[in-house]
Structures are given as structure tokens and as C-alpha cells.
Image (cartoon, rainbow, N blue to C red):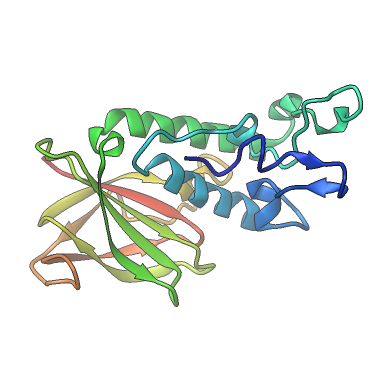
Length: 220
């Protein structure tokens, strides 16, 4: 599965436009380096790399490339990936670090490579989705919380499948001007108590960064 590929973001010269914009350009057509574009691109990439199956990153996606793609550089050289931007564009460097760390997270937690998935909460009004990932028999469950809300949400109640402490092992907000000195998070962990949720028997109140994604791991 993917967010971008060579068919999706290819330049359509017959219609003089890309078939579809790359994610940063889709999230903010006026400025693909804005906070809005950066933060929502991180949310989309987090959902991609924490989903079941084999994820694919298209060339340049890991550095926030926003230009369309074309394979004929003789006539469309303006669409070549701007690798040199890594030396001058902090947004690109930060996004590369974000993607690298997210890939490491996927390798570190077997649940992200398994097929176990449930979506206990989807709130269209709040623009929140909660995803439970697990690997049968492994016991190291993960919960992904993704927000497309443009405001920070404090004390937000989420369902959790197990009681006790859950470590905050990933926070996309850290990578905005990495390391973000004003990162919005949960101090490293949250605690699930016996208050029943809608779909699971335990809940926790958490702080969710605006246009952000969090990953919680159950303490062994």
C-alpha cells in the first residue's frame, strides 16, 4: 500500500498537470513547506507505516518532495528530485529524520508487521482516529492515535485494550524543527484505568498535538 507512486504523481503532459499532487502539495497547495503541509504529511506517513501489509515510499517522499514525477528528464528535468535540498531546507531534513525513526519503530515492534488491527474509535467531528495493532501471542500491543484537528486536544479520552502504563514511543510533533523544544505530548507515558470505554474495558486521557500522531506501547 502507498500514498504516492509513479502512476499517481506522474506529470500528465496532455492535461498540463500532475495526475494527483504529492502529499505536501495536496495538504497545502499554496505552500508545501508550511506547518500545515509538514504536520499533515507526518500524520499521513505515520498511518502508512503503522498499517498492516508492506508499505511503499515513493522516491523523494521521505524528504517531503512536493514536485510531480516524470521519467523523461530530457524534457521534464524540472521534476527531478531536489536531493540538494537536504543541505539547505530544514523541513526536508526534519522529515527525513521523522521517516527514518518511524521505520525503526516499525522494525522494533513486531505488532506493526503483523495483521492484527482494530479501529476502536473514529471521531469525524474531532478528526481523530485510534488504531490498535497487535501480533497474536506476542503481547506487545500498540495503539496509534492520529489527529487532523488543527488544535491541541487536552484530556482526550481514548479506549485502550489493557490496563496499566502505556509508553509514548513515538510523537510526530517532535519532528517539527527537530527536536521541537515545544513538543506537545504526554511526558513519556499515560495510564489506563478501569473506566470502560466504548469498545475496550479501559481508558486513558491523553494530550494530542494539533495535526499530530502518537504511538503508545503497552509496558510489559
